[in-house]
Length: 340
Ligand code: NAD
Image 1 (cartoon, rainbow, N blue to C red):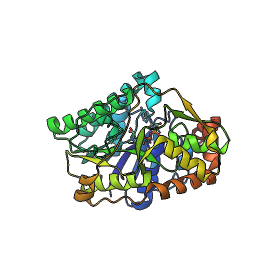
Image 2: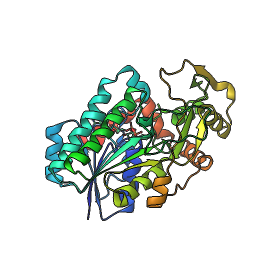
Image 3: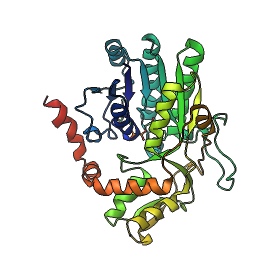
């Protein structure tokens, strides 16, 4: 029996990971600690909330007293930190909360992991810590050795957290691992992010805002493949190491938007070009060779299949994203938990 703390498990990737772990490892106990910010949505966890090996705790990873009390009570074997402020645009307008949650929150979790001697601390990081690559150099990829060179307040906060994780390993011997993954897509993705935003707006025949000329390249990975990578890393990854996660699915933003429009049989005239994001990274492309060779990871999805399934999921689960757009989802916690 292993007791695993998943932070940020009411968000997009954390939520998918909780589903994955609760179902795959009935013998483990999964504790989900989430503050339920605007991005946290307990409706995402409806299908697991009554499972015996799952528990939800509401709280802030940067609240030291609360986190230490939780660690003392629960005696976690493994800590996996997904909790973060994750939206780059929001970090451009309000960087402070990104430092608070992503940097200070990580430090509190590291301190608690050290104090209560967890067997593994895993940090869920991003390829954005490497900055970006030139648009016209398809031969260049991020490896684990690429220098850290973040562009946005979001990626700078994630980079700071990664450096703290590595310092806690080196200085205190904390058994850490870090995964740096490319852009994820899939079910339960908050509709402010590119793919769900475009799907939900196209379904409502609303204009689809594309930054700049739409030529920025992102490397897309289905969230399920991110979950299998983290599963492998926490069980078999080498302590102290970093693993890049990506499936070689580079697409320009415009290609992604056009694919969505085509699948939904909507006209390209819905596309509207808007003023570019300041400091907008040009191209991300991950080299996942280390994860493939050392741990035998292989992604299940290529983008063309994954995006079709994802679009179908949004068609089948309209209530989930419509509740977010209308703000209804914020009532779920109250109904589900405050009345118990
Ligand atoms: P998300 O915004 O969907 O979810 C974040 C979750 O963290 C939410 O449920 C939120 O309520 C919770 N949270 C925020 N502040 C908290 C705090 N102080 N205490 C406790 N919980 C808090 O994010 P996501 O897209 O699922 O990303 C999860 C992680 O993966 C992040 O660390 C992100 O940097 C990383 N990542 C994301 C991507 C991507 O494409 N989305 C790619 C690579 C890495």
